[in-house]
Image 1 (spheres, rainbow, N blue to C red):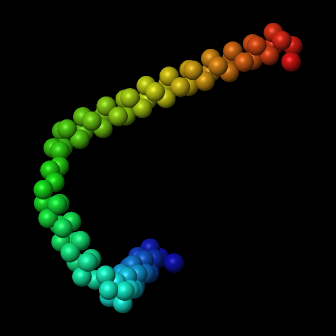
Image 2: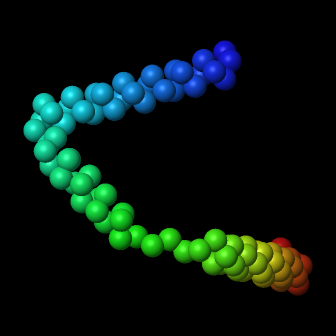
Image 3: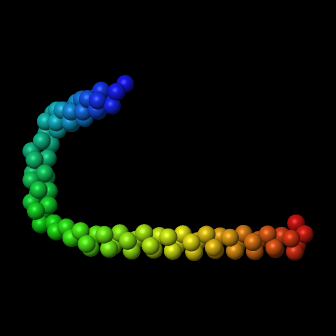
Length: 94
């Protein structure tokens, strides 16, 4: 199956799912509530401010560096604990 056919199948499934959801909302009587909800979401999204690219890059670098530091720390701690248990077992003769 080609990627193009897979794309059309995924599109058809998504459209069918959305149509089914819309039918269900109308049948159950939540369509008006859904419209109000999405209207409120749209008005709230207009109030959202997104950080500039420089800030996102800087905080991403901080997260990556902190993750590496913690990973190395945990690796060293795990190694030392493992060696400690091995030494303890050798000393006790188990």
